[in-house]
Image (cartoon, rainbow, N blue to C red; front, side, top):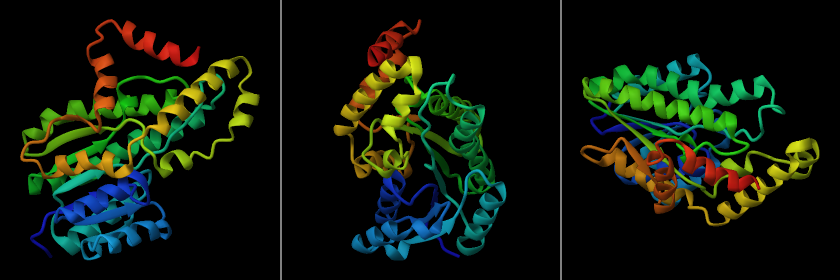
Length: 281
């Protein structure tokens, strides 16, 4: 048992999750770093040793699409630490394609990881967070505010997460739990590399959508050339973790703030449509 505050972070083998784990540990939190495959923890453990925070980080298996895995992990955390003060929902997976050429299984898989995984983990954690007067911090995306071409399933899931958390926030506040969403833009991380996209094959199979897809890929490559580092994107997560009263919605950069403002100030949707149509011309 410990009196130190404890945070559980999902999807920590790379990218924002890894950086947030190191940041939380450096801020003094006992940090439960979870991942679907703990065999991929080497990079995290190396970073923990380099930052002299290995004693504050514990790696555990948690698969957000497996309710038994979620329950087992939380039971271990409570048994070993006696409390859970914060949950950072970070695990996610991209899905590139347009609906005519994607299967319903592809769409369901994207929703399972990016939406239902968040819902399931949050649901399981809430009794413990309520007891600790803690908080839920969920990494969404600017793609949860602005729908983006060839990201229909991914953006649908992120929009769903934003709606879920925005609806949950006032209810959770009545029992002392703060809810925050963090919206990164482009981040230079394994998340993109893990897509494993064969671009020539995608374009060859795109049929009538090939010109639009080619334009989208070119624009995306350019945006990721100016991407934030995972550490830069994770810094607002640590701010939300440690703030007295974190905001509900936080963007990770000025670019992200300017980008989502397009939708938040766009009452009839025309500005967003004008913006994203230019990406596929």
